[in-house]
Amino acid sequence: PGFARAYYGLAFAWYLQGSYNYNPPIGSFEKALVWVEKAIELDANLGEAFAVRAMIRRDLQLDWNGAEEDFVKALELSPGSSRAHHWYGNFLGDLGRFKEAEAQLLQAKELAPISKQINLDIGVSLIDRLEYEKALDHLKMTVQMFPDFRGAHHLYLVTLFRRGYLNETLEEYKRFNKVSGQSDRASKLEDLFYEKGFFVASREFLKQFGDT
Image (cartoon, rainbow, N blue to C red):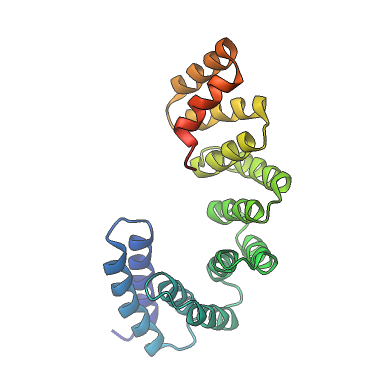
């Protein structure tokens, strides 16, 4: 009962349950908050617990100032935590502080170079800063590193389309649907592209990805 990391683990698990909608978010975040407060009570030097509490403060309490205080504390205590750098980078990006966000995300990647989500979120950050060509270069590298990572294929595909790289979009659409187990859909779009032209094919593409 006195093991702070066990309570931190419970808090982290409940936070993820709510964040990914495996369970109702508010109830999950409330449970996570109880456990993370217990972890911090038992060990006030557990940096990653402060990172979890930062996310809960943001998502449950809408306390952005308090969340940032917890992120700063987390990194003071655990400067080698890729998760704390990653989450803080995303947090800063949400605030429009893009240069600071980039620094945190790159530090996270240095600490965890083969993290799929960190690499994906660097691509998101580049797009948020309107650095589309850099984003495409990074996302291309990411899908090469993680050829079965559907999320990276999805973002790369949509960004190619929005930038008007038509042939590249079609090739990436094939890869995306192969990863998704829907190769027949890619064949249909390719046929539509060659038979009816770009604009008809684009309308079909936007039916699938228009809200992305």
